[in-house]
Image 1 (tube, rainbow, N blue to C red):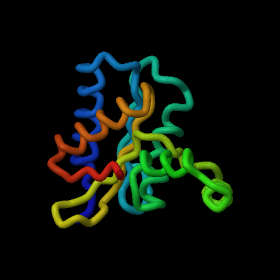
Image 2: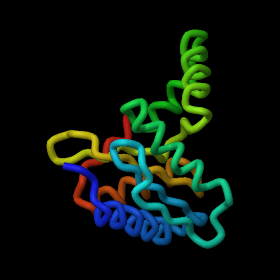
Image 3: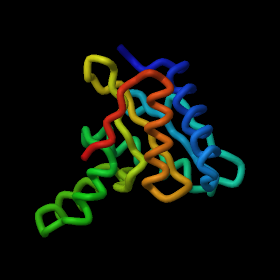
Image 4: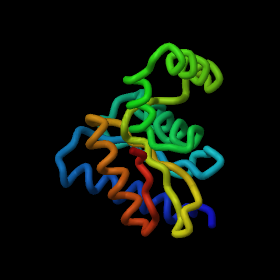
Length: 147
């Protein structure tokens, strides 16, 4: 199964709706397919000019590493010398596109296969992630935010 445009649009719409229900700052939502290609993106009025790049970076990092950006953030925070070298290399190889902060969530089908990722930026990362989870649930897909 691959992520459809309809599913990606549902994720965006539901994530933005959740953000409005929670009275969050203006959000930007990016949905990528399993190959890391942009499937859908929406930037609310008032969302900062670098928010699309941050949202894409959260989703892209989750896809590239095979785990949610929350877990990436935790690993960066706990990094010793080996992890620091790894993340320096990862940052260089990805040309700075990996954003290790909560808000990047893997999207899986019912069988557990990764079919994409959503990244959200605009409010605090935990709230961004909550909106991502709401969007994925609305599309009747499985979210994997990482540990």
